[in-house]
Image 1 (cartoon, rainbow, N blue to C red):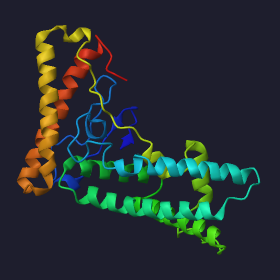
Image 2: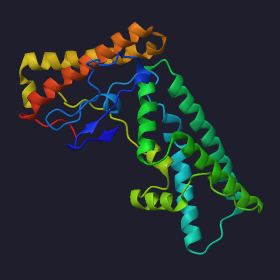
Image 3: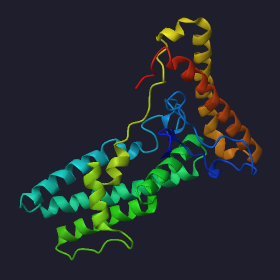
Image 4: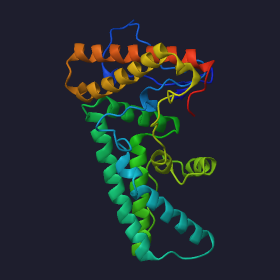
Length: 269
């Protein structure tokens, strides 16, 4: 996932989804039509069964990580004011963080190995976003363990642990200050899923029965394709290529209503 030189958001399709012969004509990114982001990939409003509730990150976005982030903010505020945190409370937070890190590893494994195509998309987009932050999914887990180790050491009166190899604490602190988030995990788990289609169907452009019928059919076809992708991992190589071709066709079909309606109405924000 990256920001193109033209200011449009683009989403890369990697060979992990399927293998296409060299020189194939598959469009490798979904760029906004008429300045709007095409509702595909992480911007898709249709969800597979696996990703229906808060996506694969739902375990961490539900209550655990937000609650932990709130407790960490209180802890940092207390320390900044010269207070001394309660060792027992810090020890419990360390145990919670250990458990969250284990959930993080299980969640990544499920996304990476899932039959569901949309889950694999989540994994690839999450990995690409982490790399844009100068980290990797593995380093995120390592930082969680290191933080938990130091919190446990504080609670038990032990010595602080050195950071994992290759971790620049000054650089991380600068990023946190710039983003306003406590850490990368907070940024990941605070992301909101897209749940609305680009148009409500009540815009002026949809007064035409033809336009309305075509738009409704596109939504049905896209949703059906997402459901078909739940078995993607079990397809043979040709089946995977056929699925990718069908997905590309839907992506191209979205360009038409976005271009046509951009002059008459504005898609939902």
